Length: 208
Image (cartoon, rainbow, N blue to C red; front, side, top):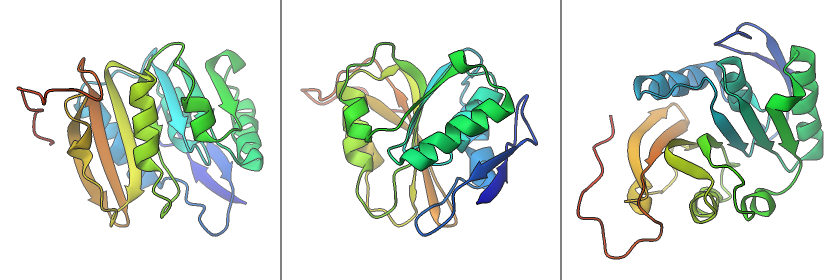
């Protein structure tokens, strides 16, 4: 069993227990700090936000959001042992049960449901080498999981052959950066429909 620390907000410095083994890779402190700094620079106020953490794993990204004032986080993690660990960490940290929910189901099962209430921030951290980013983003768009102006953050392997501009005009690329073996892509949801026809007349702003 591993241990990582929360890096920001009211729970800063508190520890999370995590799983260990091949393919298990909780977001490092450096990556989490970079993600939340980029979101803050783009004007995201997490206080009161509704958040979804897809392929949650340790739940570190969603728990960071709760620490920084998110109103509610939905954690989606199909491995029951890891889903139970997320719940155990949240209870130990004293986070009110009304502020979180853990679904121990496959991401497609959950995301195929129309969103009851769109989220302002969604994390997608799929297992490396399984090409799950595209189907996850597609479901988030067509099932209405992203509110207008919401941010979608993907954490993928640095060598992934993936064009983040695929989803214009519905998603505008706000950042595309690499940290060692990790690539972080941040999109912002527009009011445009997906898929759209014809192509947008106004291009998205350039990523910073």
